[in-house]
Amino acid sequence: MLGKERALAICHEALNLSAADQTEVCLQINDIHLSRYANNSIHQNILEANISLRVKAVIGQKIGMASTNQLDSAAIAATVARAYEIARLQAPNPEFKSLPAPQPISAVPSFYEATASITPEAKALAVGVITDLAAQNGLWAAGAYSTSVGETAIVNSLGLAAYQPVTSASLTAVLMGDGCSGYAARTSRDINKIDPAAVAEEAVNTCLLNRNQLSLEPGKYTVILKSYAAAEMLSYLGRLGFSAMNYQDGQSFVSGKLGEQVLGPNITIWDDATNPAGMPTAFDAEGVPKQRLLLVENGIARAVAYDTISAGKEPGKVSTGHAPRGMTNNLFLAPGNSSLTEMITSTERGLLVTRFHYVRTMSPLPVLITGMTRDGLFLIEDGEIKGAVKNLRFNQSVVEALNKVRMIGNTPSTHGAATCPPLKIEGFTFTGQATH
Image 1 (cartoon, rainbow, N blue to C red):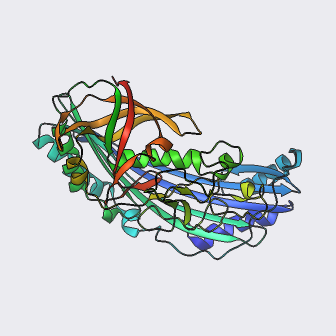
Image 2 (cartoon, rainbow, N blue to C red):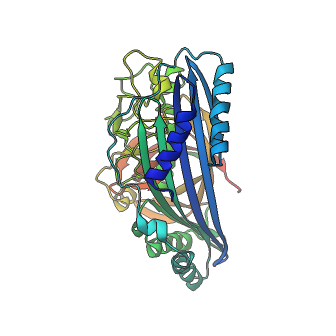
Image 3 (cartoon, rainbow, N blue to C red):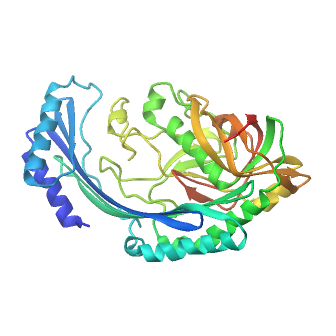
């Protein structure tokens, strides 16, 4: 790691070379350590080191950007000059007002020494917990254990100077047997919060339950989505629905509907990168402090997420700390008071979904997505799991689904860009068998 002093010094070196009216410099450093395993054995260890110095030059309302992965003085000077030249050749952007002014940035728990210092040997021991339990049950385990250590420094010509170190850890396990599979995963900035034994037990139990799969006809089913599936669905809602750019273009499900009921009255969603329960981050890609942003309250649309460009399109708007493009990467859906067991026992007939696979967008306004179930789909009848089901393909509007949530779990967990509890939803649309 370079450390705060050195990282900011490099940024200021580039800033001082710029002849632009306004300049922003962002330095990002990220080291990724990855251990992959398959067939109950680690087969690959990787270290990937990345450096990026990005310069944004502003001449009037013309904006140019250039980047380099070299930090010597000659490379920095050439990148600054290239950004200036690109800006000079651009057409003015009438929506650009200014780079952000400096604001107080509160520290968040984004860096953990235990994550930064873990060794491949320690990861191997953790993976061994999974592979050993798999072998004991006649199963094969595959997955990955990854950690990363990064630094971000941002300065601009208005006096903004921001720096933060970050760590992250992710452990995934896919268990496979004769005609069955199971899945479990954990993600955190603090590696001490990842329990390999819990991952192993969950994945093995799901796999063992996922045998002798039945075939079901497509149609509308009551579903109970585990957190893996629910969080992925919520991530698509954020990606397509809560960006101010999509809102302004009329491509968001809340376009023209702020203050109106858009989701079920039991749904409250916010974005909060300062919350330690998720993946905390102190500031966005422009150095604007992160904040808790209430997006949907009891089903009523309350806000969308802005960066400085999208804020410049509307009078009185300012960045909410969501650069680039108003992306909400730390979504939370308010938990309820139901356990997963209570959801199952309350279901006369339905499906328990472990996770989704190969999800794609079909239409942005209703947030219509398609994909397949994977690694554990189970039939529920009369409040009990009756058996495993062959995977199904779904076509489902997330907006429609979140208007039909009947129960909300009390155990949220973080996966990808969202922290979400299990959800029980009526009328979820499955369109056919999934063969892959």
